[in-house]
Image 1: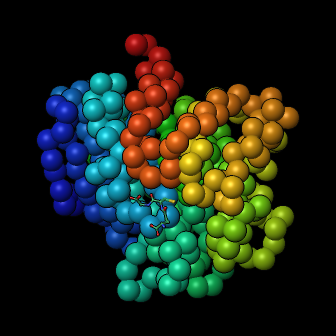
Image 2 (image 1 turned 90 degrees about the horizontal axis):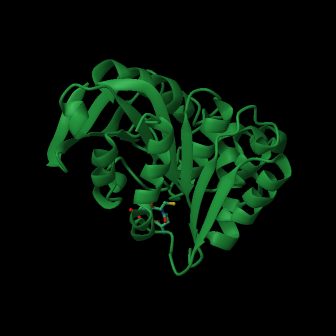
Image 3 (image 1 turned 60 degrees about the horizontal axis):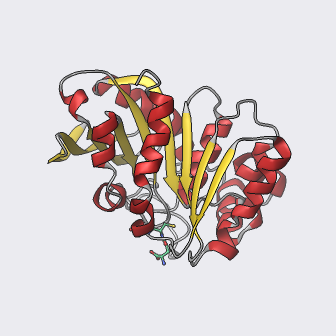
Length: 279
Ligand SMILES: N[C@@H](CCC(=O)N[C@@H](CS)C(=O)NCC(=O)O)C(=O)O
């Protein structure tokens, strides 16, 4: 692992690391915020952030304003890139497929299958790497935005026991029912709508074996709300399954990081309650 950036931030340190990934077969970049306690060598829980379409590891660390709250709760924040990248990696001219749009799953279809293995990367490889190289405990939370909200919700549902807390901002909750998701699932997993359900939060909720309480914030002025996000489908699925959900429609907020930053404190507090129950 090679450190490419480091900046003092709220008594801790925001770093960016680059490493060769065995999951994707590419170099991956990842933002790591070390809170004050971690700089002193104390083991801290780790909160994973998954970004949305077009993002790199930079969007969250420069725009979300999460460091001050991670410092307050002494949580390590880990924010990976959204896909493998590079000249030898498949891509698409559209912003919602290929590089910058990995959808946090393992692709099975050509030309994506060789490198697009973001589920393995986020759930297995990255936690092992973080827990080896940083003063990280095995208490993990996960959250994200839009495509990354889909990632956080589906990965927590697909890997019970791996995470102690989960939340999302404007997540794609039903990818098998909306254009962004249908396009990606078809490309990465093939033309089999039944298989898409394994990566669809609304479909996974019914059969969940672990019912971690979900905190979801959604702006009602979000330009993608009606076509791609459809939080009412998540509300209905959670009501039906008895899955605990706090869905907050936030009046006047759009899809941007201005919205995310506005409710970041609440999300960090939600995760800290589960990740640091002793406090
Ligand atoms: N029109 C947008 C669509 C993609 C978009 O809104 N991406 C969201 C996530 S789904 C984002 O976080 N963009 C980067 C940013 O705001 O920093 C674009 O092409 O950038």
